[in-house]
Length: 238
Image 1 (cartoon, rainbow, N blue to C red):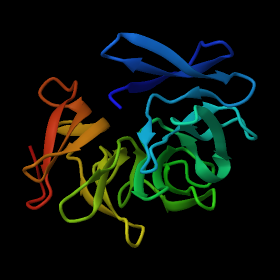
Image 2: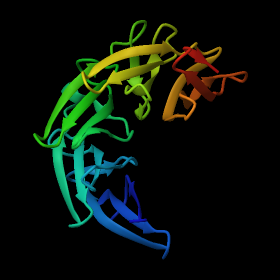
Image 3: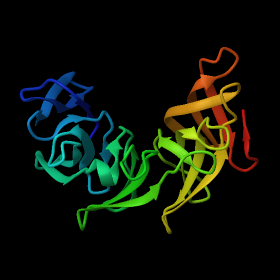
Image 4: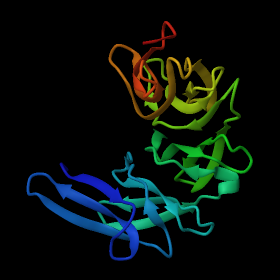
């Protein structure tokens, strides 16, 4: 519809943030929903447009366990629905990256922490049954990643790719893949480490050349991070 949508994690009429829209043609900014600081609050800045045409996202606070949960906003009806609560002991806590819709109303969600595995998790949310399940518990270095820190992107091989900010052979982070048909996660590569490329975070892209592109917070000639690429076919970083 040509409208832009976003969230603020604070402020609004109820003090818990708001969901807003912006029409670039008219310059009109509109508040669509005010989150209540005593209920679901502090929405992340990542929204996903579902196949059904609704916005789905997550809050970091509030809900039955005070660790936030998942919400859905119906753009046609203008109604907000709070779907399910996060439980830190089971699910970890939401780290703010966009959901990935695997199939209609089924999503992967990247989480940090969690009492059973502090290294982070990949969850699957089924909107039809309104159930959350754990797809993978990260276990950390040297054989697994720690703290999923990016979105997921679809490769030409049908696998989804993401990164963790730590873990792996060099404790500098990993690239992992998920097979959406089997929910199987595999570590594809370990980042070289602090003297080269380390601590990847933020959004990643899958380029038309079949490479993954992203940003690291550490490494490079000045140890302040760099833009990197990873060739899935050859297994090489540049």
